[in-house]
Image (cartoon, rainbow, N blue to C red; front, side, top):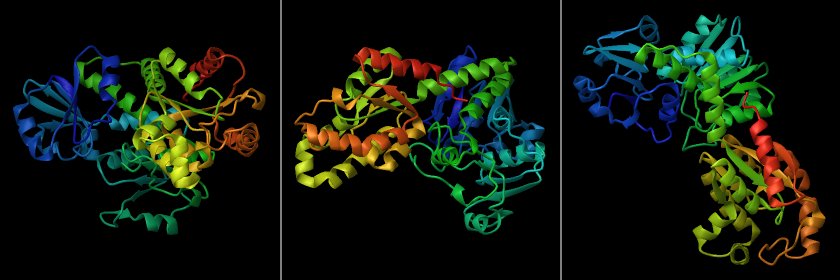
Length: 416
């Protein structure tokens, strides 16, 4: 390996895609067990690498020199081999700083909570200090070495204005989890999360619901990679290129989630969009049928609606952790708010608003098998579709027409 990224669990990593866009070299992803780290560095069989969790501090003794910023942070995420000597740097500092500045947030004279106790936590503290924070409190599960507990935060620090999460809480594959209950904070102005997969962790989604400025870690990842390229091959990368790569990657990884009444065309529209946007199509009802080896009416007759909704929830949660998909949901998936919340972590929800008079009742839909039942479901669910949707799409017209409306909105959507 000449260039690449090492870590413990890297199946979720976007680093290869980013470096492939940033520079012309073969960038590889390599998972290494802790006991094999020393041997890897002793061989020095690479030109330059990135290092990710949980090794940003562990590798320091294997290096010949580390930069002043990496030394002060006590974390290294970039290693360059120069004539057999290993030099360590920390480009996460510049990546996190760029992430905060991109959202036009100032930390000057602000009170900042930093969640986590690893190498990225040290980076966040250094950035907060550099940007002039008035107070910085480090949070961990145990109160030691200058850290306070999460319980302490709720008792003493709910007036803090900025939260930076550096823990893996909510990270793929364990999405849907948050390190903090943001509703307890009275003066919160901004929330940043180093987690980049999912695109928006539960912490970030919760911040959005509260109208708080927030951002997940993908821009930080792209930005720090640009600084790493500078170290790798002594070639600067301009901000415009970083912005372009970030936006393209965000859109590429984002799911398009289709919600709407039975018969609104979600499956047909989804299949059309899948071809146009090169995203994989899945239908949650099909996933349920496949996993249970039974039809939807058969499942309803055996376990009732409550049992079906639990099965549906499990499938929705599983598919929500995927990237670059078109996801067609069952007509009643929006009845459980947990479903729409988890779908938003990696996706943008589109409500296909097909008029009631254009919907057709069919026997394969247990709760809308005739026109009377269909009308009842429509009136019960319509407000829920509107509530969960990021965009409402006119569902009248042909499949191609409706799909093109979604495609146009998706292309125009800005991930700022």
